[in-house]
Image (cartoon, rainbow, N blue to C red; front, side):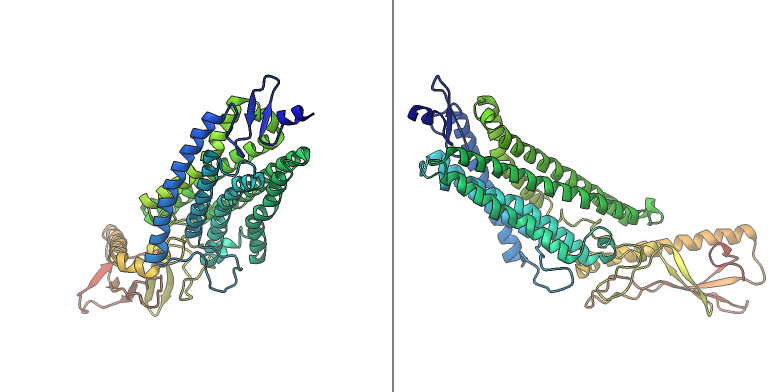
Length: 470
C-alpha cells in the first residue's frame, strides 16, 4: 500500500518502471520533464525580470513625472468602478510579473519542497493579477467612453450599477474562489489525495468558466460598440476629403483588432485550462504534451506583458483612439462647455435679414484630443492645430465661392445680382474655457446697387442649389 502511494502523489505520477512525471506547477525534481521545465522557468525568470524593469520605468514616468493616477476619484453618474485603463493595466501586469518571477525562482531553487500549500498558492496567485489587469482595462475603457459619449455609450453599456457589479465580480472572483481551491488542494495533498485532485480539477474548471465569461462579455460588448461606431462613421459627408473620417475609421479597425486578439488569447488560455482540468492525468504522463503545455502556460502572460509595454514605448499615444474620441452625430453629446455639436456637414441655417451662416464639415466635428486614458485634452489640441484647422476651413470656403463664380459665368449676369461679403474672420476659441467647437464663419448675403463699393465683394449670379432663388 505504501508503494502504491509513492507511485501517485499530487506532485508526481510514476509507472511500473519507476518512470515519474511531475506536476511542473509544484515541482521540477525527479521526473522526465525536469530538465526541459527547468530551462523554461529560467527563460521565464529572464522575461519576467525584463518586464518588471520596463514596467517600473513606465509606471514611474507616467505616475511621478506625468502625474497620472490609477483611479479616477471624481464622483459622477458613471458608477464607482473607475480605473484608469492604461495605468492600471501596466501596474497590475507589473505585479503579475513580480509574482511569476518569485514562483519560478521557488521551483528552480526548490524552496520549501514539502510546503505544498505555499507552492500551490504561489503558482495560481499571479494569474489572478494578470487576468484582473485586462478586466480593469476593459472596464476603464467602457467608463471613459461612457463619460465622453453618453449617447454612444447608452447604446451598448448597461447601467452604471450593472457595470460596477459585473466589473467587481470579474475582478474579485479569482481572488476569492480560486485561492480557496488552490489552498485546499495544497493542504489536502498529503492527507487526502483524491480530494486534493478534485479541488485541482475544480480550480481549472473555474478558471475556464471565468475566462469564457470574460470572452463572451468582450464579444457581446465589442460587436455592439463597433456597430454603433460604424453607424456614426456613416453619417460623415465627403469621407474622401475628411481626415477625421479616416482617423476614426482607423480607430475602429484598431478596436476590432484588439477585440479579436484578446478573444483569441482568452479562448486559447481557457481551452488549455479546460483540457488540464479534465485530462490532467493524461497530460502529466505524456512528456511531450506536458512540456508543450508547460512552455505555453509559463510564457504566455509574460510575453503578452512585453507586447503591451513595447506598444507604450514605441507609440506612447497608442490608446488615443480617434474612434473612442468620435462624438455621436445624433446631437446627444456635449462638449465640456455644454455646447452641442452639429449633426451634419456643409449645411446652413437659412437666411435671416440677409445673413446666411455656413457650417463646414470640419467645424461640425468636435476636434477633441485625448490623454492616455481617453480623457479629453482640448487645450493641447487647439494650441497645436489651430492654424491648420483655420487654413483648411478657409480653403473649403474658397472652393465654394469659386464653384458658384463659375455658375455665374455660365448663366450670365443680370441687373440684379447677389453680392457676398466674406467676413473671413474666425472667433478664436477660449482656450481657458476649453471649448472644443470653433465658431462659425459668417457669409453675409445682401443685395447692393451698382454704385456700392466693390471692395471685398464677390459678385455671383444665382446660387439656387444652396439658398434658392430670390
